[in-house]
Length: 402
Image 1 (spheres, rainbow, N blue to C red):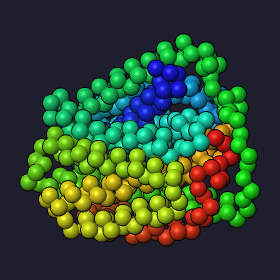
Image 2 (cartoon, rainbow, N blue to C red):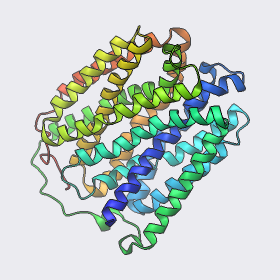
Image 3 (tube, helix red, strand yellow):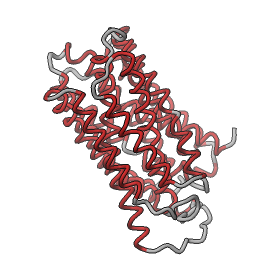
Image 4 (cartoon, one colour):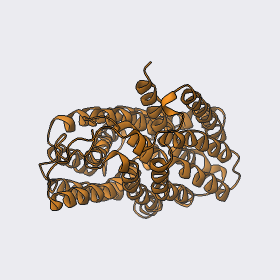
């Protein structure tokens, strides 16, 4: 296997683990801890909030360290650090203790997006499909968090979900470190300044166009963070409530959640191909409009119909993920890219952190029907914002780096 292929494999595994670890608690809280610790779902899930705050605010320093020191070195820290934090979470006996462990998981999880995504797009002209493939692994991590956690809850207890996952990540980190020791190109780390790829000619675009692109990116990033967190965090509970005749055990809830997420994950491949070959504005607007329609349909559904529509809206939610990453990768030079992704993901995960207590409040006050109504309105805002994206943003048109 060539070095570039091996690196891409590790980056994909890293994206899988990143999203996997951030959602173990969501399933454990919904299906076991409410009973074991005597707290309601609305009372318990806010303990995940510090972890998601750390997931956001630590992205910028992680990106800065990667650009200044070593992207490869930061990835080693990611694998081993998040694994150790997960093992500690398995020892928690109180909500406060698990909140501290989840915060540590969030700190190390923050490394992946600014660092890993910068490594995925480095040296590439067409970035849509590689980002989409990488995104599929991330979404499969979301899917497997519910599946594996649900299964382990029924067979070995919720703690085993944290223990086993942590050991696996530490092992992967050691393999990654071992691979770097035999890679002469990586002995001193891979900094943006020393490893930057040859620059393409910077395009002649106006300041107004650049500002508009950044405005669209960060506005839709914020709204998209609300939608992504609401759907991925709450879906196990939604399935438990809406599919009562089909999912009556933690394992079955995990299986149905896995089915929804795993089918939807592959939407990124389609969207990745489309944004590499067609207008991003058109693709973006279509994806957002589909979200609006399916969220509105989901408001009052249950049973099999709810399962089918859940697959549909998750296809649209996951399909949106690579679009802003492609835009950012095209307009930011390699030596600044980790920091740029860091800023974007601070926005994403800061919104995601505030969404956790928001989900609890909406669910306890009105239920999930109202939540899906709010998400439909949010998706409509993304649709309108996508229409403001200048049509000049096509492959290579704004690329500052191959």
